[in-house]
Length: 155
Image 1 (tube, rainbow, N blue to C red):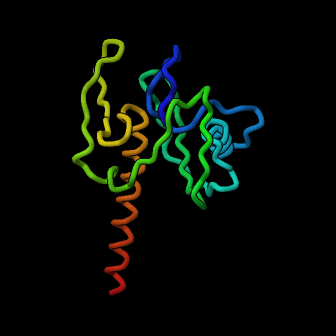
Image 2 (tube, rainbow, N blue to C red):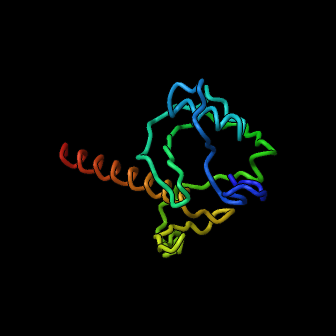
């Protein structure tokens, strides 16, 4: 989703639904499904949580715990006008196409940091969101390679 152009730190940027853990949240998965409901109207009962990726620390001093889920059926998306300027899907074929990826060294507070970008989606995806997608893509590829290897062993 694309955040609204406002005065917040990540104004106008593409991100996943997310936010801080609240006292009533049982764990990271509960926080993630609650935020997805608040920001996009996704019914938590329609999400099968598959697991989480490694924590990610950002140059802007955030600690992100990415939670991966599978939608059990096509959702009805009802974005929050206060938190979402636009939302969109990104296909796995776009993610898997290395020609759509690039990295650049960008300065932040006097230091240079490798920053990933994904071109070709409705909006430019970069920074932590792109890093999360690359991490997920690496896991998918590793899992596929393992499955192919196991199937060859049984031939």
